[in-house]
Image (tube, rainbow, N blue to C red; front, top):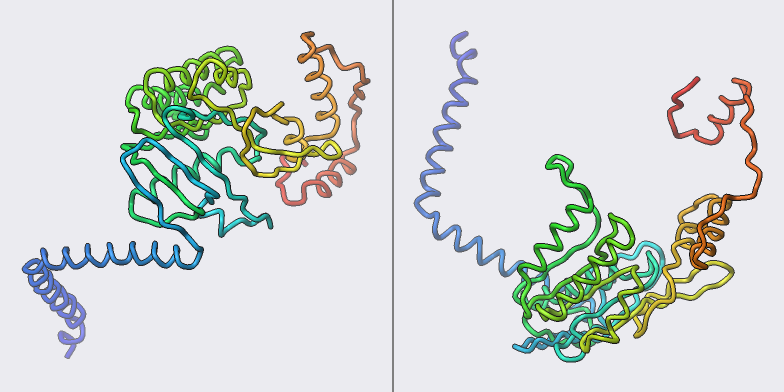
Length: 331
């Protein structure tokens, strides 16, 4: 009886493993049929999901052709259109890219205004059209693209000794050396990680190369307003900007892409929205005015209070009140 009790668990595991081996052998005999069935179910599931989404959110059927046009009317971002958490309603926008008149669009405007959303939305809708999906747009004509190239965001690769700027340049190099006239290129800032003149020069030269030598359809968002002068010397370069409205030293984002250049980048207003101290904002305005007038920024004439010692008891209470959620490093 002791042998039966002590050996039952081991015999149970051995029997279970034998049955598993038998089942695996039987599955292998029908492997090809199982894989074909799984693939068919996966395709049906994907197409069914796209169809259900199109029905629920009023998508439209795009026209695909062999041209190099890319026209989208009232396009919407397929994710943000349904998942905005800020209480805003998504603002649709048009896209007009065609080889002779507007194959390279320069987009200016402040941070947070919607430039990146517009760029990614265009790339997503192009991809969706070419996998057979309907699109969140009033209408769309998509000339087939061979590849979609993107240079978006900022990241480094310190394990390989590459700075943020080097990663950015590697991505730009990949695009300029591999894109064709049938490609769609999305550039969300070039040249930010170096000096202003260096960055501007690289961004300007890259834009010229895309227009003159590659001929790819391209959306290029930039804060270098000087580059917008390319529209005066290049026939297929057009300037667009994200509309904003100033009110009481604040900016209101209208999220609409309109023809023309932005007058400025509104960086200080965005810094205020982020919560920078008011004295920093005020000083930044002074420095900006001096720089724009061609002068070296002068030192602030405001008196800086001299630091005085604070009793330990008072300091602990201040830390407790101001940073209740933080672990104090002192005291």
